[in-house]
Image (cartoon, rainbow, N blue to C red; front, side, top):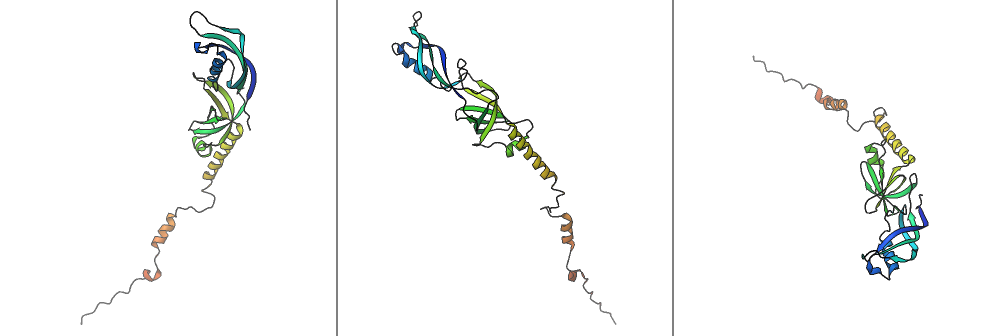
Length: 218
């Protein structure tokens, strides 16, 4: 089973600006700032922060520039990050089916999209492909994030599943193509037998009825 790729690292989070309401309450402001960044992809952290601890302020105190009132400071902390990589195998639960792709959730949090392989027909994908609620193992091919920091994982099916789908398609096709010469009787009644049945009549009825004799005048 694919494991959740987590990494605990001490990282300099960077520069933050706290509103004036957090003056003399800098740690509370920092915690609220970091809480808002959880489960969002961070370029500086190169991953998605899931949790943090041991916050440290770099420097003796924050700074206020001009008359803005905002408190500027640099911090670092220990972060637990979700850092999937290209080529890594992940496990998701299918929550969306489509003709061209399947969508799933990785660890109940992260969206993943896996396209239908080009070699697999739409019919095979529909009949034998993934199902809602099923677990799906796939290989990561790309990582994207939208403007809100929501991570989107793109992947592809592993070779084993693709081969299984192709084998099912070949088995289905061979079964259809070989049905005419298999020797089994068709459920559809034979036209010839039907005609023979319709034309058969009992022998007693097939005999001509005796003709009545005409009376002869004398």
